[in-house]
Length: 281
Image (cartoon, rainbow, N blue to C red; front, side):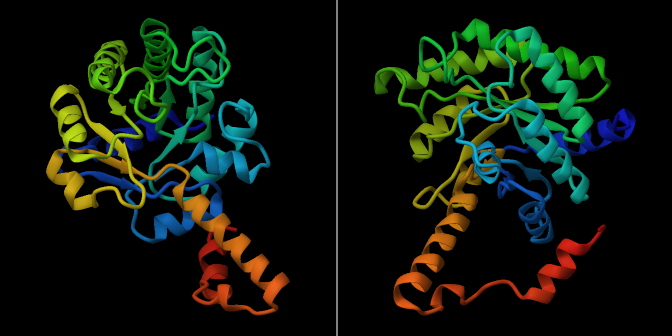
């Protein structure tokens, strides 16, 4: 079991990094190599991506990966870097709210100090879980972490915008209603992927009584522009993993069809990678 006192110190440090207007920037990682590279680039923390992690293990994203497989990967990542790690646990790897407790204990055992828990209901009767049902899951996560003596940062993800739930003119109000319920249940921050336009982000910052996390992609406002809107955390989800896999496809197709090697240009130096990834081995 990971030392809870040490873990709580790291959790408190991670918690302090969420400042409106001075966003914590998280280039999401999915394995030890990507996590080490992200940390070496200067990231103050490492966030996992469930999509990238699932794909790395040959599984589709969307609550398809088992808890043990996912958190084994998180444990390897947490052991490989010297910065706080926050884990994307999808909807909690649990059907019943009470079973989220086992997931949170496993997250702490893995050495992570934060979680993203989403309200998407992949196998349910609606796109999103009912507000009260999701609030109950968040409350279990909060109570479990508190009982373990760790100030786990619970980042409650709201998928109204990402999944296009409801009428556009009603989406902001629905999102703020969910945010209020989740914060009251013990969430520490609110994550609204899919919302990047400045007007919406500004309204979310004003209406959410806690740190706001957005997910960025090409064409989204820059980090400095998000900062000016009052965002506290910026992540990129599976974006870096998607870019990496796109390079694999381009290089393979070029080699197999053209017989040339241009896609390999700009790769990291072999010796540099060997040194970076060999640390601690």
